[in-house]
Image (tube, rainbow, N blue to C red; front, side, top):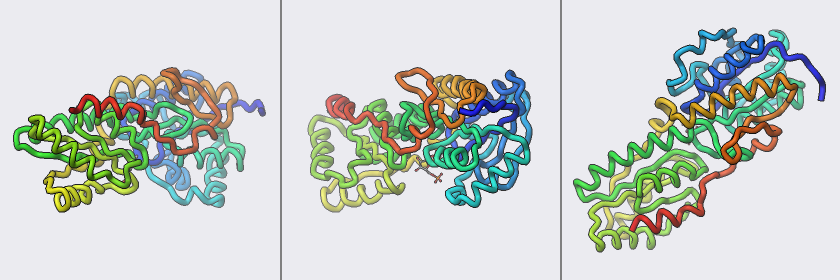
Length: 328
Ligand code: F6P
């Protein structure tokens, strides 16, 4: 490992925003200032880096943001960054500005870009997992997940009021792309009658309809079915159609959508974001060059970045039985 002196770092948020990203930015900026580093905030992730769109930050640039969702640095998805010629341009921009290291707050795709910047151009990089999906390998937790679950759970509670009052079955679709983490946790926390995971691409309609009917026989007048969005949002509409046409069960669909990405972060998200941001700066100061700050068994740790570059569904599917047992 080369012993390079870190004097100046840059921080960015990349990919889908998640509540708690502002807490990480605040932590990185203030920890860096505490270490007498120069710190730049890059706007709109890799796209902003390619546009040389960044500014130096100070302690007050991150004042009063700890409780806000979204990201003051903005974010974007940047497909160009998959190409080496664009990464070369980014490395040159960092070099021209004498920036020694980059902190990337985002998901596995953003980490792949960071790893390539390190491997090809020797830029020190550190990743901090930020996505509502909780779908990154190597870490049990991603910043924003807890808030998204809280938001979705509150929405389901509200829908339950109207479902109950009007004798209705609701399909409530939650985000998570290919991960079922949000669906499973929200389903258990809101006492859903059924949870359709991502892996249930082929929905078992016989089971679903017989569960709904069994509930009715037992005196339930409403049902909540949580649906993991899967590959493409909106699959609940099709499920509702099949339930109606083939099983004579009518239902209402509610796709919660981007409401799950906003809002004030929960204490859990704020806590881990604050600890992880500071830890990222310490790792760079200790000359770690290509790492990620993760949460394992409820503790913050620093691990090689390549452990965190795969999608991994952290839905604890073994707990599905809890929901099935309790939702009778
Ligand atoms: O950030 C993750 C996520 O919210 C997924 O849960 C969802 O499928 C996707 O992003 C939506 O992306 P976009 O905001 O680009 O539509």
